[in-house]
Structure formats: structure tokens, C-alpha cells
Amino acid sequence: MGGKVLQSSSMANLPTAKRAAPRSLTQFKIGPPFSPTSSVLPIYSSTGARVEPVINARSDRGFDREDGDWIGYKRNYFALVASFHFHGQSVDICSTESFYTVDQEGEKHQISCFKLGLFDYCLDTGDTGKFLVQHTSKRDKGPQFSPPVYNIVPGQLPSHGFMKSIANIRNPNRIDKCYEQFYLTEKERNEFESSSALASYPEDAEIARVARYERMQFSTVSKHFVLGCNRKFKLVIRLMCELENGETRLLATSETPCLNIRGRSPMNYVSEAPAEANKENDFGQKRKNAEMSPMEYSTTSFLVTAFRRVQGQAQNRFNVYSGEHVDRSNSRRRTQHQISDPNIDTALLSSPMESSTPRQGHIVTLKLPVSKLKDASFSSNQLQEHDPAKVKLNIDGSPMTSMPSTPRESNSYGFRSSEIDPAFLQQDNTVNDALEEYRKVQQELRILAPDQDFELDLPVPLTVPSTNGTSANSSFFRSPPASMGEPERLCKHGCKMKTEEHDKQTNLQWMNLPGVESESTSFFENNTDSSLMRFRNSLSKIKADIAPVTGESSPLSDFSNTYTGPLW
DNA sequence: TCCGACACATACGT
DNA sequence: TACGTATGTGTCGG
Image (cartoon, rainbow, N blue to C red; front, side, top):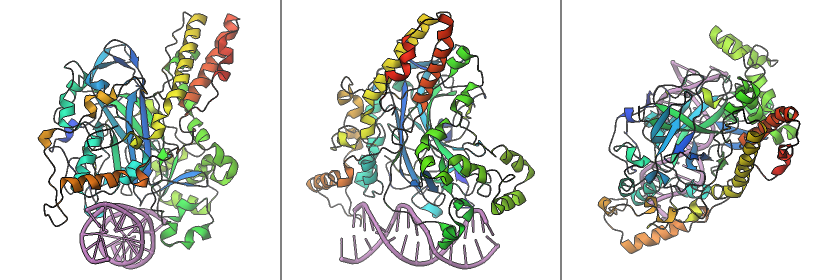
């Protein structure tokens, strides 16, 4: 691990997964960085209709629930899958439809390609893109990469059970087949309408349906990882697009709740009795259960630009979000374990200057350079809340992942809809209710204050098409191209042995594994995404501002009671 | 105290 | 069932 330079373009030592021809890093390089005030841009189809992106993501390995906190270990791997789709649209929309966006200046830009990436965000320092590394299966002996940024089309998130079942496959045939679930085949990517988005995707780069991140670690190499001071993170999925001019823009983000990343130091166990932490070797590193535990965090395209206009609170983005993610995601743990209150915990850990814990204060104060002390002091009482609008997109992404990977609904290899994450399939009702509510309220706002611009960005996670989608007949769901030929069947000694019948049997057994059936992946248990709650709260504020002016009662008064179901 | 490097144990795929 | 591999983590030393 240590001492190795992060590689972004090498394909050496990767597993025997099916891969596209090597390509240059520049094809994956993110374009110019955002200006600090840039924000999430809307997406429109060629007809001018607004389409709402929904990000679905889940961690299948590497994080544990402990005393109400999410815990990860720097030494251990974590895994994550992410996909996106457009609300109410088929996942094959990119083969028939094109998209454009409109920037802050009102300028229209054609979208040539969608991209999706995984980024880290350090709540203690506000740093992003500095800590994640991806290993190959060779671990210390292999190279390390920055997490890749995928060229991606809409897709369906595979279930935890499915991901579990393919976590360690080594059979080349299975790997090949698996690869075809996660990436468009040659045939699929060649079947599109000339005016569609898919026509403008890079020809020489893979196109993913689902972004798969395996063997990920929070790097211990980073110089920024100072003495356990930076240990609270969020993982952020960003849906981006590449414009015709080559620039990259942000379209939506989804993030985890606060993750407490433990290193090997006893400092990372401050919420435990020191003696307890030191009982275990290597400073309390706990042996982890080998069972993969799922962790879900769906969603969000959100924004608050409207509130700036309506309420005149230009800085409200931060205020609106501040603390809310943390509070909501940890609401239950707070009542049960005060010591694990993320804010209290953070105050101790990230405030060396004010810490009442001699060990921490002593260590950090001694070793932190002045500049770092200055940086650390800001987080004495609160974390640096992640602001998706203030991201830097000039972070290189490795073009490679360690494994190929995602299931389609059904194909010639027998993948079934049960391998799609059930949570992904259950979003419709909740989200449709929210969407209807949103439209209703927006209409009200226009009536109440016609001279105001109430162009609210929809913050709700949106849904997959349930019945009217064309997935079943989509070119995205066809068999892999014959040109790929029949994979050579070899035994472990390299002999061509397996018969076709044997292969079928093997695949059937694989598909019938108990773990393959979908299981609950409700990781954040309806608390994951606070964007809808924020949205509703903010609408209420708008209502409160407007209602007195108009002096009329409004259905808006009942907004908070309109929808009482789970938000996500 | 941190962390790279190596070693070992165990689970799992074939 | 043997074998090889992936991964969690124990340990040493700089």
C-alpha cells in the first residue's frame, strides 16, 4: 500500500476480467473545475421537457453499524455500486433521446455523455477527492488507482444479494458474463438513433450501466490524513455530464451519512473506554464479520436556487443543509447513545485546540503544522457540511475498475429481475406522490406570486418506469454480440473441458444461490435522503413568507399534511 | 504514534 | 476435496 504512486491509467495486474482495449486517461479526465458558485444544472430532453435524474447507490461491503454510527476501517475494503435513471423514463432512453442543459448564464449546451463518479468528502477539513484509493485483487503487490469516473447510461441497481454472489467470482466465463451486465455490449452500443445521446458517447471507451467500485479504501498514504484528525467522511456519488465543448458539469449528487473511518490508532476509539480499545491488538482493530453488509443511500437531485430568489438568502444553501444530513441520519443514535452523537464526537476529535481529552489535544497540537492547526480550528464545533454546488470536478478518475460488473433485467444468460435491487423498484409510489405534491405546490406558488420566479429544482428522488418502460424490448437488454464468440471454456489447468450443457447447469446453480435472491437493503431506513424533507421545509418557509402578503388561505397551509408516508 | 511491509489465518471459488 | 486466491488483521520495524 504505502509508497505506491496512485495510478490512473495503468491496466497492469488487474484481474482477468473482460476489458476494452487500453485507452488514454484523457478520455476520462474531468473537465475544467467548477467555479465556487457553480451549481447543479437541470437536464432537458430534446423536446425541451425537463427530466429529473435519480441516483441510486449502495455500499455492499465495508461499513458497520456500531452504537448508531456508521463505522469503516481504513485497513479494510469497502465496495459500492451506483446507477442513475431519469424519473418516469426507460433506462434505454439514451439510445433514442438526446439531452441538453442550461447553465447559470442561461446558455444552452448539448450533453454528449453522462458520467458518474465516486468521491470522498472529509467533513473535518472540507477536502474532497484526496483519500480514496482502489486496489486490485493483488492488494499490496498491485497498483492503486483513483476511483474511476464512468461513462454511463441509465441503469438499474443490482441487488445486494446479487453483488454478494459475484463478489469473488474467478471463473472467466462468469466474469465475462458479469462484465456484460455492467457494461453495454458492442451490439447494444451500436444500436441507437443517430440523434440520440448514445451517438455522442466516446467510441473507444466503455459505457457502464452501473458503476461498480470494489476494493476501495480510504488511503493511509495521503498526507492530508493527519493524525486521526480527519476521520469523518461522506462518500459522494456525482452524476455529471460532458458537454459538446468538452467541459464537465454537475447534474446530481447523492451522499452517505457521516462515516466514521477508523485507522489503527487508539485515537480512533475515543468513544470507547481506552482500556477496552487497547484490549485488542493493533490498537483495537476489530476483526470484521466477513458477511457483506449492505448500505444504501439513494438519491437526489437537489437545489435551492429558488430559495435564494424567494427569500433573498444568497447563502442559504449552506444554512439549509447545515447539520441536517447529520441530524437526520443520526436521529435515533442520538437518543440511544449520547456519547456517539456525531457532533459531540467530532468536537472532540477535530478540535485539538479545544479538546478536553489530553491524549488528543496533546498529540494533535504537537504535530499539526500551523497551517493545519488553523484549518483544524474551524471544525471545533461543527463539521464542514458538504455543499454539492461547491465541488471541484478537476479530479482525475482512473479509467479502470478492478472488476467488471451489473445485471440486466433479463438476458440470454438468465439474469432475472430479482437481481435488481428491490429498493430500487419500490420507489415509484413514494416518489410519484412527492412529485405530484411538488407540481401542485409550484402551481400554487405561481398563482400566489405571479411576479416571482419560483423555478424550484425538484429535490426528490425519482422513480423508475414500472409499466410503461420499454426495457424489455430495449436494445440495452439484448444478448451480447455474436462477434464476441463463445468464451473459451477452460478448467483451472487450462484444458478445454466444459460442455455447453455443463455450463448451463453451472449457471443455473449460480443463479439459484440463496444469496442471489434479493434481500432487504434498507441501509438508511428511510432516513437516508433528507433532500425531500429539506425541500418541503423550504416550501413551507416560502409559504410562510407569501401567505401573509396575499392574506389568503391556501392549500399550501396544508402542505405539511399532504403527504405523510416515508420520504424514502 | 503512524504506517509500510510482510505474514498468517480463514473463507471461498473452482 | 485439494488447491489457489482474496481479504481481514497481527506484527515488526523505521
